[in-house]
Amino acid sequence: MDTRKMEKITALIISTIVVGLSFFKVWDLQTVGIYAGSDIAGRVFYPFFHANILHASLNSWCLLSMVFIYDIGIWRLVLAYIIAVTIPVDTIECFIGEMTSPTVGLSGIVYVLLGSISFEVLRKQYYQLWMIFYLTAGFLFPHTNAILHLWCYMLGFLVALLNKPIIKKSHD
Image (cartoon, rainbow, N blue to C red; front, top):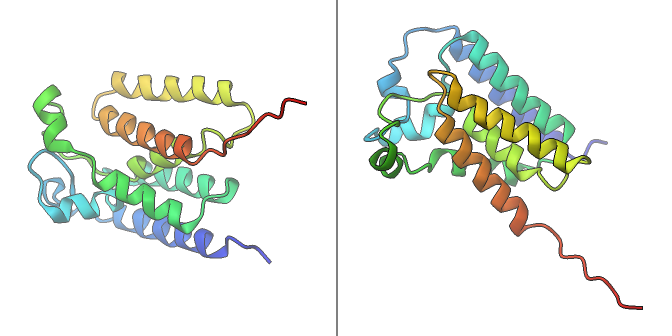
């Protein structure tokens, strides 16, 4: 019996909702997105709304891949959501002025999860080099909230670092 059945079902439900919502283009991004000065509803619901079906499909695929391949429990999913929705957009906007247009998508949650598996992957340096590439590429593409990706990845990495087991070497 699969011990992570609840997490997989949860990820499938989230992905189904995300892709389903992307078929309806009636959403006002100012209402459902997160940005400097956004209300609490935008902050809480922005991961579930996407700019288009391709955006929703890619983010859903990434979420499902993470949950089905790595040992991501329900509490790690909840923590990833909490980290993603608590990005300090008003503070970041004061420093760089980039968080004024609404952001939507699951990528914040996905980047927290990507950071949280940093010490679980087999080829750690190779993985980190690819993550640097993805994070850097985000700054080069317009309409990509690279600051959100970087923030979420760094906090996911910090969670992984703080939860990494300490290995004591014996001096025989």
